[in-house]
Amino acid sequence: MKGGLKLKLEGVYKNFDEIKVLHNFNLAVDDKEITCILGPSGCGKSTLLNIMAGIIKPDVGSVKDNKKKVGYVFQEDRLLPWKTVYENIKIVNKKASDLKLKNLINLVGLTDFENKYPGQLSGGMRQRCAIARAFNFQSELLLMDEPFKSLDYDLRINMVKSLIDIWHKWNNAIVFVTHEIDEAILLGNKIVVLSKNPCTVETIINVNTPQNLRNLEDRELVAVRTKLIKILSNQKDASTYKSA
Ligand SMILES: Nc1ncnc2c1ncn2[C@@H]1O[C@H](COP(=O)(O)OP(=O)(O)OP(=O)(O)O)[C@@H](O)[C@H]1O
Image (cartoon, rainbow, N blue to C red; front, side, top):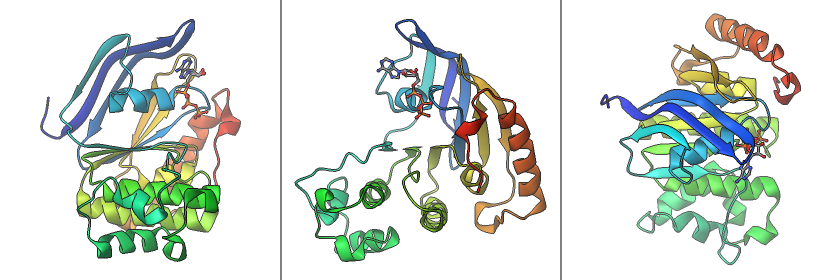
């Protein structure tokens, strides 16, 4: 596999009994890039991430990878209820310094809650804790399944900026599933639009403006947005997507 590639799926098929989910699915995930995945509800995005993570195997096809450390932010937070925010974040990298952990907690806006247990937090706060935990585990490939969906708009935009900052420092590969068109436009080097029944790659749009210079009103990004809205509005489940 080419050095610049982190992951390559070729001719992947996945069924669950009679449900045909992935169908002749082909996708290359480049190293040091953010790949955003947009697709209708229930099309197979989580299944795709689980295959990328090696949690489930495809029925047919190959998954070639040169990753060693995979991070995964699931749709649900998966925090340990008997550990505090601080301890939940520390658990994936016990060597992290106290300063690093406190900076991460600050980054996700949980400074006053570091000694609270998950049961004492709102859903959005728990999800932010899960995101800080993923940031503490410096993975080569970070899979994120709608990580910001329970956050309000301002917080989401802040989390997008924080993710870009962290990614600039790490230079890892990120695969980011979202229903938010603007999140995909702000984050993706590549925006992959999926179809449903069966799930396959419908279109890939490359975005050239560096993430730290992106503004949704820029000409390139307005053009990407117009193109995406046109493609997505032709899909059966167009109501799946949000554009702020
Ligand atoms: N373990 C499983 N057993 C049986 N069916 C499954 C399993 N996992 C997923 N499916 C089915 O596969 C299809 C794709 O599910 P998946 O969760 O991958 O979609 P998704 O695009 O992530 O959905 P959403 O946008 O709602 O998060 C659905 O029809 C789902 O019911």
